[in-house]
Amino acid sequence: MQPPAEREESSVSAQDAPPDSEPEVEIVADDSGDGDLDDGADAIPEGPIPDRPITPAKVSSKELLAADGFTRYLAEIRRYPLLSREEETEYARRFHEEGDVSAARRLVTGNLRLVVKIALEYRRAWANVMDLVQEGNIGLAEAVKRYDPYRGVRFSSFARYWIRALILQYILKNFRMISFANTRAGRKLFFRLEKERNRLMQETGEATPLQLAEALEVSEDDVVAAQQLKLPTLSLTAPRSSDPEEGRTLGETLADHDVDVESEVVHSELMNTVDQHMQRFAAELTDEREQAIWSERLMAIEPLALAALGERFGVSRERVRQIEARMKTRLKAYLTEQLGESLVLDFTTAD
Image (tube, rainbow, N blue to C red; front, top):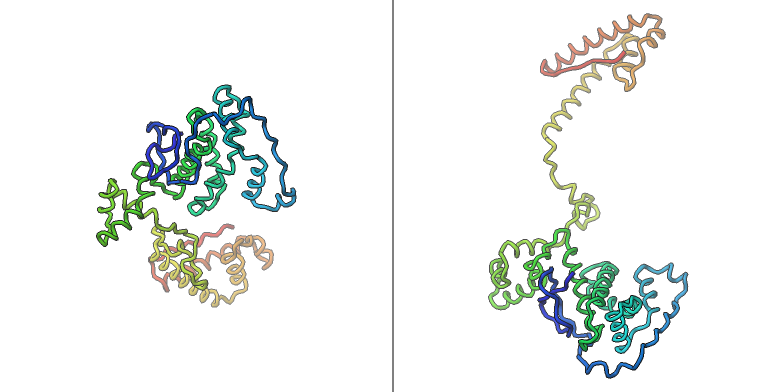
């Protein structure tokens, strides 16, 4: 993993930038770090520096349980003491020369607050600050591995470069569901599109995609894609308007091309017409047995058995079946007369 070899603006004094063999991330200027070179190790005392103990938490366990994750994290990292320049150099030397993992751990824990400080600078670009803190911590660990204590640069100044690079790289790759910032042209558009648009508007009064593409040395298609992706994301489940009485969501207003609305309407009207004629046919039934067959077999969700009806009326099962068959024949003839012969009717009923 490499931070950018080229960046928009950067005043961080650091060791030589890594080569261009891996993806780059552009770095925004940061003058807050102590990046001045000093005279070397004259101020470092003789012998190893004793480790300072980790201080206990200053808040109760109940307060920590009630706090959010970020607050609990801040309470935890405050337990680790900040490092002086001499301590940073000593721990870095021990890790660089002896591979002392405990010294590397001290360098990381002593700069966790620096990661939070840098991550908070981008809280407007990413809602969950802890995501940025985690990425910054990865950059901090990478800085520990690459730091050279003999170059005369303070570790915290060098670490800023890697912390910011990893945070920006995370935002670039994840700030949209569809990312265009994974290429050199995309990163250039991410950082410079609005700035270049404002400059062209002041100079020429317009900023067309072609003008922006020429100024940024990218294709016009890249500019158009970047402009579209910078638009606010729309949710299909969000309310269609700010009016609470509107009720419908954006997804409910989109047409479903898999549904033939005309056929659905025709079928619904036909079924209503058939239902009306069947009710008229039922109203003309006068025989008690036919009425029972109609309501308890032909119109019932779970038809009553023929034998049960035969037992009720004192006739055989076969007699009930014959009465039902005649009713179906009369009903089919009635509906054909009312609706025409093109209507296909199925009066199959399980016994």
